[in-house]
Length: 343
Image (cartoon, rainbow, N blue to C red):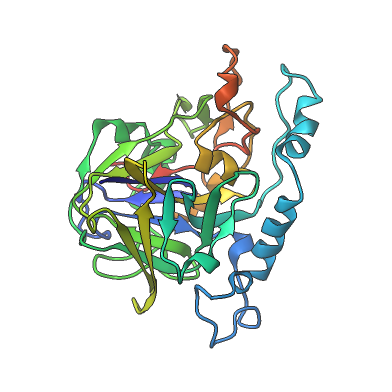
């Protein structure tokens, strides 16, 4: 059984070629945003990080998810469409609420019975279910940390050192720990070391992104909005993910995903998407339009210099209308992923 994991949103990929020995092994982090932070009062000491009651994950984020269930994609997109197709969308006000998650299409994949109650329906994405993440390391059974094969297409993932040259080799060790160390729960909501599979770029952004740079020409390109991990060893027809506490590495929960009859590839999603964009991400659809935002300020926290860093703007281009059968709602804008060390 073939298997793949598709990463999207506020994800930073570390050291995939394993050239920098001051960084973790080839890995990825899902960065924490302001609206994912919790106080001890919100998460009592005895409450596990992945609770049997999903609402205990984060009261604020859970409130947002529940509110999205009562909205339609048409309601979200209507204010943009009413301005007319030739008018640039207004920037989103940040911070927006991001949902760090593991997701799957329940019409093609099932999860072990004892874990199924932990999963919620993805708002505006019928059939898709997700479990929220909060400070976990993800391990794949039978795929220990190693050096993955990095496909040439990965070069389409925008690199921090390219769009923000002054932050080269400037690390915030809460996000980018020394080799053999763990990131901090206050900085990341998810962490995963890669094994011996293959890393490649997935879907590209439907519009170019433009990064202004100091004393240099702007960096403009159509960059990857997905990174795909495939061809990795796993447990027969199943993919078993172990969720560990990101700091102590104590086992929190095990998730076993199995294909349903007629499924020839088991696809999982690990993302950190804006709450209005998670349906776009898991359905892998092309947005009808794209807004500006400053979500990259969260990704830029991987650097230690006290600067919000460069955030991209959308380059408005005229193009043929996308296939109406593959059109998603309006995107909340450039949201990563990035390569954190330019290589």
